[in-house]
Every structure is written in C-alpha cells, then in structure tokens.
Image (cartoon, rainbow, N blue to C red; front, side):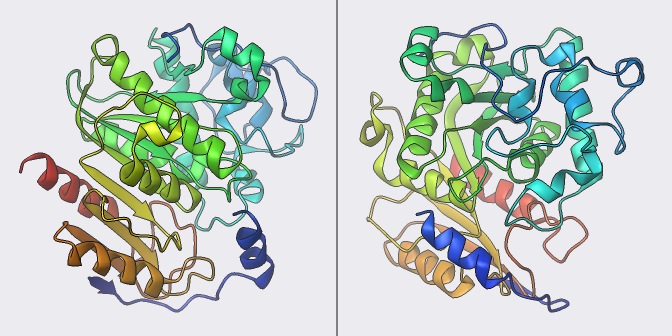
Length: 343
C-alpha cells in the first residue's frame, strides 16, 4: 500500500451516499445508428463551432450535432442526463453526479481529439450490437465503444466509467484515461453501456467478445488485455475479471491480465480474481478506503498480485486526479499491468 498525504477535503454529502447505496457479437459497423434520447431538439452546429476547434465556451449540443459524429454524437455525453441547449463544455461537470475535479481542459481536449480523428477518416465509434439486436432491445442503441487509437498491434485496454449504474460518466471517468493510454501507445476502448448492474456487465462482456472477434480489423493485440473502471465501472471490471464472459451471456474469452479499479466499495472475493490494482481517497464518502484495502489484502493472501494506492484527503470520483496528490496514479496502474503481461 502507498499512502500519499495532502490537504483534507470535505466528505461527499449523505445524499450522494444514500443514492449510490440504492443503485445497487455484432459485426464492425459504420459509425452506429441510434435514436436521440438526450432531452432537447436537434439543431444545426453553429458556424463558429464548425470553423474552428471546440473551446470551453462551445455548446455541448454543438458537439453532439457535429457532422463528424453523425449517428453517435449523443453518446459522447450521458444519454440518461438532461442537457440544456445552452450548456457549455466548461459546465459539463454539473451533470456528472458523484464526480470531483472534472477538468474542462480535458473535456475540450477529448472532443477535439475525437473530431480530429473522425475528420481524418478514422472510425472512432463502434456499435457492439447488430441492428437486429438493437431493434429487439432499443436500449442497446445506447451502447458502443469509443476507440482511442494507440500504435497498431499494441495491447488493448477496455474502460468502463462509473455513474452509479444510473448513467455513464465517460467524459471524466473513462475518456481521459483512454486518451492517456493511447498517448502511451496502447489501444484503449471506452465503453458506453446500459444502466443497471446486470445489463452493464452484459455490455462489457459483449465488448470483450467484440474486440476479440475483430482484433485483426482493429489492429490491436488483445492478448494480455486489461479491464479498467471507476466506481460502478470498477465493479463491472472486477465481476468480468472474476466470473468471466460466460457468466454474462457471451462465449468464453480469456480473462484480463489485470483489473484496474478506482473508488468502489466491492467486498466479494471469489478466489478467481486476476491481478488487481486499486486506488481511492481517504475522504471518499461512498467507497471506503478501508474496504478497498481489505479486499486487496484478501486477494494478495491468495497468492495473486495486488496493489493499492491510498490518497490522503481525496473524495470520491477524482478521475485522473490532475492537480491533486493522486496525479500520476495512472502511471502506477500501467506499470502494474505491464508487469503482469511480462511475466
């Protein structure tokens, strides 16, 4: 265990704690077709947004409606959240319940990265369900993988953001991580999934299947892949790591070489856990650092490699932790994953 000391922050409100406690193989397609479910009416992208890169003052709906994101722009932001027509990118943190240290600079960097990649002819979004499956279950239209490309043939990571199984906080809890992994050469996939613990886990199982089945087309090395997640997404990563894809309706695929978990109060240990890295803050009012530390120790007691970073004073949902004492934790997580792959 590594504990880093720093300024003490206030704990999350009791309301947030109670809310979280209450929450308990398609082919590679063109850039996904899906119905709009974010509140508001469709509109044209402003001329200013079309002519230049997005800024903190850009409207969220200008991103959603950008032609570069035709058919999937709405999935960049939580489809289960109401987004005002006048909301700016700098204000996105206001709809990301349970999260702290949401960076507007990161938000801008991510949407510009996605648009630049799409305009360069790179496919940045992949539907994981077939059109037939989505017709049978319309909720599956709100799923898919955003692909942050690294080097062709390099290892792959699959990331699931949290959101209490009520929404997907990808803009803070998986997109930034995926972008950082891609900068280091890794191929990173950020999953957009359906609400609910079981359906979310089924979507992660399908994502694992999808990437295995299309690894050659995607130009990724899926052997030795890792699963990443924050909060609810960390539970998903742990469950798929322990129980495998067959437990969630898919064929059997190899388990991950490593599971990377942030701030979740999961307690169960099955004896089948992959090597696991975790990190959490001591002022987390949702996921107790003691609970996470205890679980890591139990995994280690089984002879499985496991590590935890505990950051003094940090609350729930710090993401990459930029500008805090947690900044750089992702480097520890990557090193942990690399060590498992190289064994």
